[in-house]
Amino acid sequence: DAMVIQNPRYQVTQFGKPVTLSCSQTLNHNVMYWYQQKSSQAPKLLFHYYDKDFNNEADTPDNFQSRRPNTSFCFLDIRSPGLGDAAMYLCATRAGGTPEDGYTFGSGTRLTVV
Amino acid sequence: AQSVTQLDSHVSVSEGTPVLLRCNYSSSYSPSLFWYVQHPNKGLQLLLKYTSAATLVKGINGFEAEFKKSETSFHLTKPSAHMSDAAEYFCVVRREYGNKLVFGAGTILRVKS
Image 1: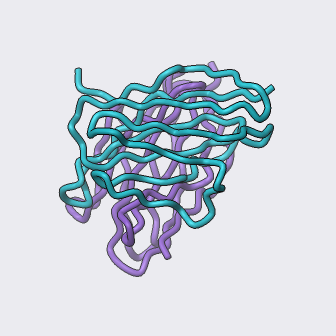
Image 2: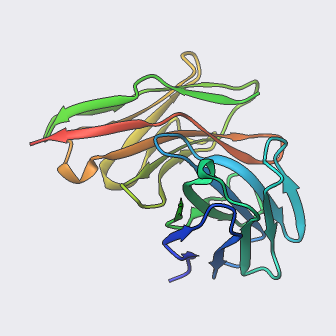
C-alpha cells in the first residue's frame, strides 16, 4: 500500500548529539511536512517542502534543519538536541494539486533526549 | 488568520452512548476543515474533511460532522461510542496562505465500559 513511512518509530539520543529522523513516501506527493508534537500538545508545523522549495516556519529554531534529496525522502536533522526537543515528530505529505487534496501522515518518530 | 478552538480538553462517555466533540473555527473565508484522530503513540488518521461541498460530512468509523457557518462550528459526532474510539481528536483548519494545517489543542475522548 502507498504510504508515508517514518523511521525509526522510537529514537533515543544524547543531549547535544546530532540526530536525524527520516520520512519516506510512496505516494509521489509534491509536498512534505514536518510537525513537532510535544506531550499533550497539538502538532506544530516546523517546515515543509513543495518539491525542492524549502519553507521554514518563522518560529522554527535554527537547531532544526531539513533535507529532501528526492521526491520520496525527507529528513529532519536536529543539530544539538536539548531536553526540550523531546517530542513526537510527524511527517505528512500532500499531493499539491488542489488545496483540498488530502494530507497523509506517517506514524511518527518519538524522540527521547537523555 | 485561520484558527480552531476545541471547546473541551477531555470528554468522557459510556460505551454505546453518543459522542459529541465540539470545535469552533475562525476564518475570513470559506474554510477547509478536518478532524483527525490519534491513538496513543500513533500517527494521525483522517476521520473526515469539509471542503465546501455538503455541510454534513460522513467519515470513517461512523463519525460525522456538520459545518454550520452561522455558528462557525464543525462539531464531530457519533451515535454510539465504542471502546476503540478512545483516543485524542484534533479539529484542524487549512491555513489559506501557504496551504498548511492549523491544529486545535485536541480533545481526549475516554470511553467507559
